[in-house]
Each structure stands twice: as structure tokens, then as C-alpha cells.
Image (tube, rainbow, N blue to C red; front, top):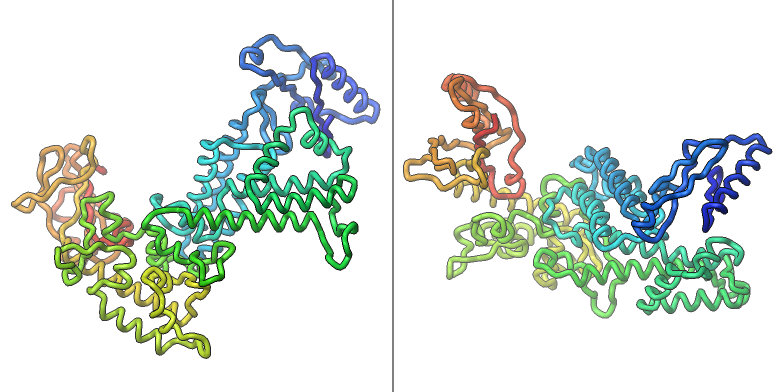
Length: 561
């Protein structure tokens, strides 16, 4: 029998014994005038195979009512099933997480709230759903992937990064460990709690001395695979041996009082340090060019090695404007040509003509944009001068001298506000970095706009492809359906972008054309409205590619009527 507050769970190895326990509880409740909630009183039969679960079952009665036999049952917030799997519980958890995350959507997408604050709200309100009861339920690898995806998606929303961002970069920016590590920490801490219980406690007797004790044995095997945990567990075991098999909750009086040895607290601290060290090691082992700058922050500083992931000060700021650009450069998901060339037909070379190498190519990545691009050389010279004038690090090493001694990855990380060799830019220097990134990005957008004055055309009625084909010699655009449409190139690219929905009454609805172009003067808008038989005006948000740095392109959509 398991008792917790007003919940009673009866366990028996036969139908007759279970009916006897039901009658005993019923008699006790009648004696003390206690009522029973028959709607929540159910029976779940645990059988070994699917065939046996579908076989004939016994009927149980309580207070002249048949008890319903169910395949699943919720006890203390965890769903148990008759096949002893965790599919149902994980499905319920995923649904709850999805619902709560949607409720926080406005907070996570708010540009004015600091990134770290948004992440802390989600971690406090939603993450406990992913970790509740993790000491006892164990997902498989596929289920872990589904659960961890919720954590990754929420962190991306807080950072306002796209879905292609490396998961390790997202978690490292917010200093959040992987969900699997958090589950392991919960199990390891629970071991210390079990060893501090009295020997007669049912949880200790079942887990540590049960017939199978699979949970206990698997956890001990996990501990032996990690030297740090093994050494800490040996100390915990020696303390239990000195105290008649029970770990003391406070001071261990069997050792010198001068040491003030608290075995349970020491074990928990060892587990936390192991988790932080494992998170750091996993991030260092990640491979990819997008993590080159971020991984510079975890490189050893001389003989002193860092013990955990450092905090990135940029996450304390609201992620909009230049800080959002810096976040994307730092995480490796900016719209630089070296990244866009993987998903578009754009070349990976730098858009500035004077920046090409002798062979006509110059790969545009974050380090090139920040440190070597000739198109923003004047802005970079001004930035180096500000490092000298606005540095107040005396008598410490000046920012300009420190910046000069760094390698390329370290310099890029310093300009993006990250910690380098244990040092973060002071507020005045970080403001200079923010100004440089903003002005350099605007210069890049201006070059892209001048190189791509024509609007982008997307035919949503095309079958199999939504991308427009090339421009014809007469200036029209050839669509996948075989028709062509003449387009008028807009003269300016400013906000807000305005959409015009044009359709004549005799046209086929599939040929509706939405021409999104820059804001025009009232006279010009009136002229455009009169040139169509039916025109509706609506404001639409600026295309995402403008924020990504590919220029304020104008988009046209066919078939959106």
C-alpha cells in the first residue's frame, strides 16, 4: 500500500489479494465516515505481453460498483501504462510544454526584453514540465530528441534566431545545459537522498535492495564510467559505512569536527561540478565553422583552464538593431554570403567589389566581415581609434593593446561582446563595437541593394517550385506556368513596405498578383490605384531577408488572392 496525502495505491500479485485490499480500505473508510471518489478509483493490470493484456480480466468491486479497468493511470503527476512504457507520459509532457510555450510567445518574441530575462521566464515556467519526475522515468534516444527540441526551440525564440542555428550555440549563449544532463543530475542527486533515508523506508528498500534493482545498478554503472563521480560516490559510501549504512543529513560527526564535512552537500556539489564540466566538454567537441568564434571563448587562458561555460554579456541586452546582428554573427546564422550560398544561388564572395582577391573570390564569413573587409576599412580604422580614446582600463592593460594581441577569432569575439581570455569589453568599448557593426551592416545592405535593384518574384501557383525563373531580355519575368509578366522596378527601398492586391473581375483568381514595393508618395499611390480595376491596399511587414542583410529586396507574389 502506498499512501500520499489523500491518495491510496494498492499493489497485489493476484486479483483475489487486490480485492481483499479494496475491501479493507472500504471498511476503514466506512468506520471513520470517510467518502471515496469512485470516479477516480480505477484498476490497472500489469501483464508481460500484449496477448496477455488483451486476455480475460477479473472484475473488481467497491461499494457495489464495478471498478473500471484502464490501460493507463496518472499518479502524482506521472502517467503509468500497463506495458510499462513512458510513451503516454512523454506525449502529455510535450503537449503541455507546447501549450505553455505558446502562451509565452509574446514575451519570447518581444524585442525590448533582454534575452536572458526571456529565457529565465521560460526556464522557470516551462522547463520543470520536462524534468518533473526525471529520477524515475527514462526516455529513449528518440524521445529525448523530441523533448530537447522544445528546449532548443524556446531558446531560439528568445534569441530570435532561425531554425538552422546550431543547438550547441543556442544553449551556450544562454548558458543552459542539455536536457539529458539535467536528467542525469536529478538521478545522481536522488542517490544521495536514498542513502540518507532510514533502512525501513519503502523507496530505499525497493530501489536499493529489491529483487531486480535495475535502477540502482544502472545508475552505479553510470557513476563508474565517470572518474569524478566515482571518487565522490566512494566518499559518500564511506560516510554511510561509518554511520551504520545511513548518510547523515548534516555534519558527519564520525570525522574531525574541524573539517565540517557534510557528505550529502559535498556529493551534490560534486554532481553540479560534473554537470558543468560535461556541458563545457560537449561544447568544445562540437564541430562546425559556425562555432569558430564562440568556441574561442572556452579556450584555456594560459595555464588556467576554465571549469564551466562563460556567460555572454550580450544576452543581457535587448536583441534588436545592432545587438541582434551581433547575436547572429556570433551564433553563425547571419545572412553572410558564405551561409546563404548553401540554400540560395548566391555566390559566397564578398559583395564589395574592392574586396575580391586576385582570383575574383573572397569568402564572406563573420571574421572577414568584421576584420578584413575592405569595403568597411574606414569604419574599422575609426573603431581602432576609439579603442584608444575611450578605454578606461588603467592601470590594467588597455583595450587596444589587448585587442592587438588577440588572434582573429579572439578579435571577432571581442567585437561581438563575448568574453575572451577571461575578459569582457567594458561598456564604452562595447558601445563602439555596436556602432561599428551597425554602420558596417548598413553599408553592406546599401551595396546589395545597388547590385540587386529588381524585385524578387515568387509564383505561389506553380506546382513543385515556388521560386521564380530568370528575367527575360525584354525585362519581363518568366514563371513556371509559362506566362510572363512585365515588372516595374521600384525607385526606392524604404519602410514601410506596401502591398497592392490587384485583380480585374474577368481574371482567373489564380493569377492574382500582390506587388510588394517601397512606400511611394500619395500621388504615385493614387496613380497606381487608378491603373487597376480593383485595388486594395494593405501594409505588410518587411521581408526577413532585409534583417538578414541581403538587402531591402522587393517581393511579388502571384496567386495569393
